[in-house]
Image (cartoon, rainbow, N blue to C red; front, side, top):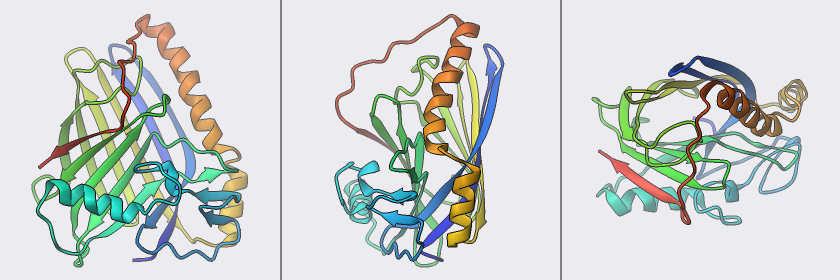
Length: 250
């Protein structure tokens, strides 16, 4: 596969219980080979300012110029006795004029036969906190896998929920649905991507068509929060959380 894929992405949120609320938006995204991120695009940079950019400090341990490939390999080997070579691709939103907020980033870990062996869902909230849901993948759970909600992402979702991750992939194109559910609440979220050529023209074009897309993500989160609060009249306060956390499945 290529080292960098440039993707058009559509994301949606749909609450069906205890009330209805729906929205969707579009933005450009990236799928990066963390071991070899060669870049020749004039409008995109790695760990440097540009129109679009990727900074390793936005992910993983969130340290400047950190090697995310080594981090994800250590994370997997810490729990699983897996010694074979892995190719790791990170799906994420790039910075636009040096700003980004990634509600979710996904690490896809392939073996040398291009079979997915591990998936890591890196979830962030607006309080600069992070949790990683780490799945060991096999034939039974590739298309759908489950996790207990371990992380505060919204003041309108309770803690006692179950996530269902539904993945349909034709890499680099991704169709991912993440549903959160309990007896009183049901939230459907998802994203779909379409690859476009990673050319100077396309990067500039998509940036202009989606001006300040990364800034808009944060604005839309708060705008929708106001709408949901008006509908629900409920608010769940955030528990204390001082360090990034991890949970393993499989």
